[in-house]
Amino acid sequence: MKHIAERTGRHCLSLPSNRLGLYLALRHWCLPGQRLLMSPISADEILFLVLAAGLRPVIAPLSPRDGNIDVTRVDLDTVDAVLTTNLYGLPDDAPAFAGKILIEDVAHAMESDLGGRPLGTFGHASVFSLSKHPSAGSGGVLTVEDESDLLALTRARDELLTRGSLPADVWSVATSMARQAALKLDLVRPALKLQRRLGLQEAREGHRIAVRAEELELALKQVPSLPPFDTWVRADLHRYRARRGRLVRWYQERRVARVPRDRARRLAGVQRLAELPTVAPAVLDDLTRPLFRVPLLVRDRDAAIEELERNGVSTGYLYDPAYDDYAPGFTEHCADPAPARWWAAHVLPVDPMYTARSLPILRRLEPPAAGPHG
Image (cartoon, rainbow, N blue to C red; front, side, top):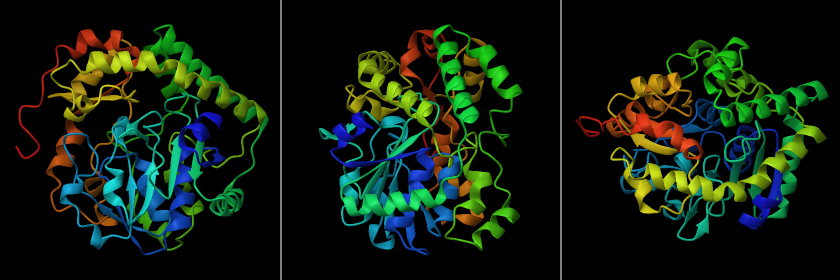
């Protein structure tokens, strides 16, 4: 992808999904049994990718300022590697992890910088998502510095890819285009109903997919291996390992090319949302970041989601509960889980591209009654 290659100055490997890229990076740089420090707040499938790679998830303390790893309370001598999240586009403190294997998940942070340096240029590898800022429906890009790593990762990717098909590619592009049309025409509410009726959203227990502990124990006996974990990793993207044809690649390039053009509109939305008393403190650190979502911290988050949806505003990208509460038997728990629990219960991510639709409701929301430690 030209835009990502130019932004990072790195070699790029095209992928059918961000999640496949994260698995490839973890397997390439980490050894089974190593301890991986990771945020307690991220997408469901990320935890299962870490487990599939044979790694031990060490759940980091969370900073309530930004929902990322609180580096001031981490003993890096106890872990082998770090996976950043850059939640909603707010940057992890990547330089603080120097000396460790560092994999950057830049899914939410395609356009974010830290100290004037683009995210995705700090780690051994970084993985971008084409379904987030570009809204391409699917696709990912893995970036690395060394060509030798690129060649090895390309071979590993090809071994894991499954067969693609033109009808599936047409469906992928068509559904993505339909989502964009629904947003532009303010048809989000009927689109959500149709999406659920068609089974395009995985069944969930609250905001998370089911762990299914007994099945997961059986899969863990086969690590490091990705296919046994497909039923968890593929959530809402069943073709996350399928080869993509020319149609999808054309559509992805077209969508990625829009990202720089949408920057001003995204920034304007961030700056309007930053005026709300509920905005997460770290948003105010740098109002020149075109965030993927603007995190608000509100008293009754789930009631707010229902009201927004009734008014045609969809809220996604909720990661509740925190990993060590979500899968307690499969993670090394954080010593202080209170900030992560508080953040997971109160965060409301808002799309800055459609701020005008949500502001009338957002202005009425109140901050949480108490802080992360009550």
